[in-house]
Image (cartoon, rainbow, N blue to C red; front, side, top):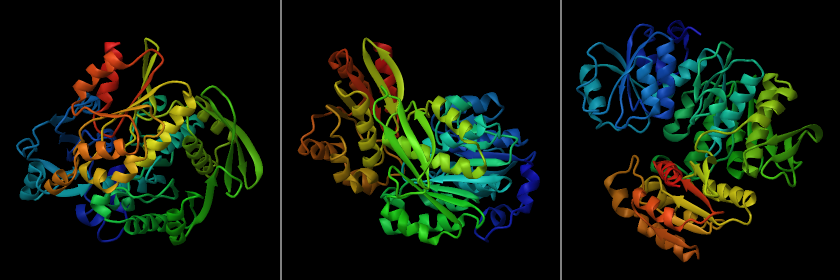
Length: 480
């Protein structure tokens, strides 16, 4: 792919990337990323470095992702005060979480530098290949990782940008030589509408990102726009038992295939009982036996993710043997039921779950995997606004845990009103009222101290949240 030449060929609406950057070639130019440490932003930054761009950027925190970029030649600062932006900057890329009052962004505006969104750059990259976009409120990362793993196993060498690290395939980003581009498609800020996929997936549609969308009707409408963006000769793969998807998919202009755990769908799965943590299931395509697969990662929700991946990869032309082999060896993405360690007969797991549905299905999977063990859930709420909007749902999502420890809310994109309207203590009261054994410990460092003296051999500890609660898992294993 020649990204510099390809961007000149993009034909898109006036509001898209082409108008904003005037089709300016990027090879050899300086591109500055505000929020470069984000999982998606860092991935695109790595692709642009490979494409011959000079990359710089800022983020408030350092990480392994920023370290990798620095090793590749990127210059990164943590001040984000506008002073570090090179005078020769040709373009600024911003993540969806960056507000207009960000000093770096204000500096870019003052300097007259073209500013584009991360999703617009991602869309322009996808334009050069055969795009596969995976959307949905939950399951995007795992489904994207499964599809990328299958395509790589089949020797198709896809380009992929995934919202989580996938050790089996070398991380969350790869610039492949094949003609396929797999991207996790986020609905926040209607970002996924900047993509140009031939194949799309909608795993589910629920209330989330209500700080942007306001209500479920607007969320469904955005997914309807996404469905209509799939090319007419392409394929849209959707969960068959989601009423909101049923509304959105009416807007699709392409072929649609459904999947579920019953025989009412184009692709169906029948879970085989037993397996000691290995999920074995038979797959049927239009009521005809297709194959038998197995997964190392637990939960019926991951069987659904595997069905979606199977439908996509079969459409692409991958044989069932390659699909079977890839799924059998698939270990999942980091922070998705990731076992951090087993020490002193205590199993410590980390998971990204930060929505009531995600918490519920993850804890259900844990209970199925460890039916006789005491399960601790260490939960860090993500966003004051999400906690406020989904408060009742959160309170009912912990039923499969024996003990809950609740941290303070991790702030992200929250304004002053949201910070005053909601608190972790309000969530604590709701959870306690639901009859769950819950304890409120605001600081993560204090949690580690309490857990190290309270957890017993045979227990399972699961850290959950989209913030930095993962530190508790690693610190706990280290103490043990």
